[in-house]
Length: 497
Ligand code: UN1
Image (cartoon, rainbow, N blue to C red; front, top):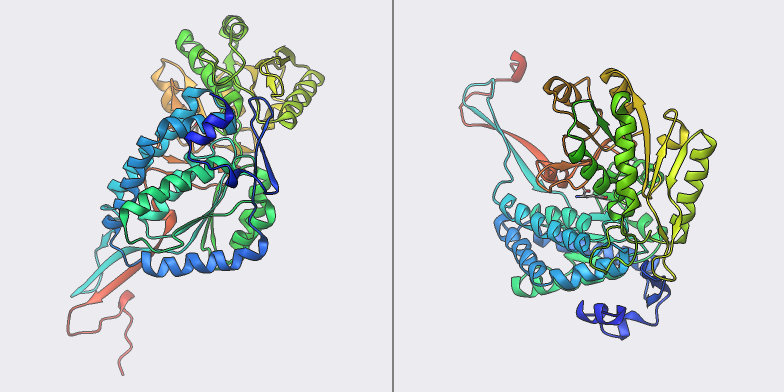
């Protein structure tokens, strides 16, 4: 299929793809596929006001009815899966299966949120006073700003959107400037669900397209109580404090520098498969990508040899072609950053296998994944480079391995490959991994939507997706009701008039 065919199948008319100022390029071949209109900063106050107006109506709609909208969105996504998946491939450069997988992740979160719409539970609490009842209720909080990144251009939006909508909140979405078309396509799909739903308020879901000043309008507005931002730690360091300074709630999902510890008892064949998927899948451009391998010295030579063999046969190229496992990096700048990181690794004593610029499709930024043996966990190893680079360091004791695993600024995902129960449980314990995600015999990427997703330290501390992450999109109200004829005070305080 040509780029034009993919855009047409996703419902784009010629007019909306032309005449604007934002050039959209496909990482596959660098071709400009659209020039779309950007939101002007001056439009933002009216957009936020519209969301506030929608909020006043939407918060009063019963949550299970709100869930019906998200159920319909899930249905529309099922119907549009192939077209949207292909558009993700076109605009983010993911291989076909990963593009489709991303849409599946959206469908899954819609199912989760639909069920959740009947389960926004609060606790009842035993009151210390006779004839009193205490309970907490979760209420809608207001418009949610969603700032998303190019690498999961649709799934991360859907985690936030599905949750915000069932929780009673309108959404304003600022996608990455690299991936506005997938965002526009999602809004088209949501519009179909809204049309079937019938009576949703106007302005419930809005899309804003543009650069940092558009994001800043969301970050700075007191009328956007929650801002969920996914991207670099640098971006989060700006967004987080600004939202907090106006007493808004930031939900931050920032950089990761995810490690795998491979212990002597590990099933090495399984480990190799997990390593390759999580290190080179999505061309190393997941926030959960495997970036560090901490291998027991007794198996290091053996494992590196197995990995070098696996890396040598990796099909790099057109992400649309069946069989390709490694597609392009998002752009030339990403390829330059990869090459710079490899040069730094060499200067820090590393031995680099692979990593060369690859042919791929003319115009795209393709590279062979790199495996880099490091003498120690030096500066470059502690840096997140959004590219398929896997650093390998050795260890002798599990304590040392866990210390290495935790000794980076980021804290998103982590894992251990071991068949030793003591090692596995130690890794998961309070003295083990310091990350938001810690797995055993599974790589660090490809998390299911049912768990809360996010991490500690420079990863930002936010949680999205499953478990009770929905609480981040609501306000909690504690209520005490006195059904007695007395007025006892808490803590036994006497205050008789
Ligand atoms: C991201 O890279 O921003 O766990 C999200 C994973 C995916 C989500 C990644 N489910 O790899």
